[in-house]
Image 1: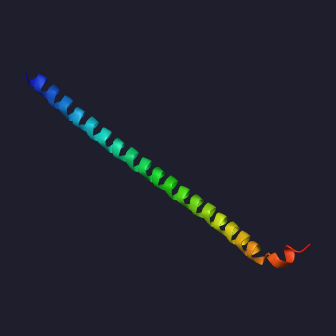
Image 2: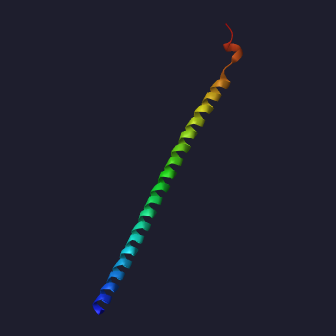
Image 3: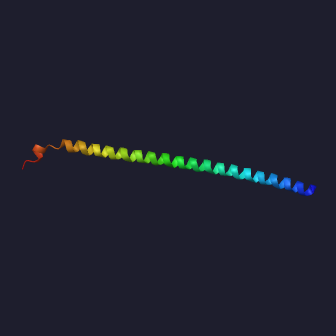
Length: 77
């Protein structure tokens, strides 16, 4: 009986250690996953910001050129 109790305690200790190892591994995985997602989201925002700035710069250039057209002079034959 004592051997069985010792084996049971050892099995419980091993199970508790394995459960803790799984918890630690899962937490580390989740942390790395969230860090990766955070980096990706920040990069996407940076790319979108640069893209939209380029578009706005382009639109501003077109506006300046459109305003520079001298309608009266350009419409003469």
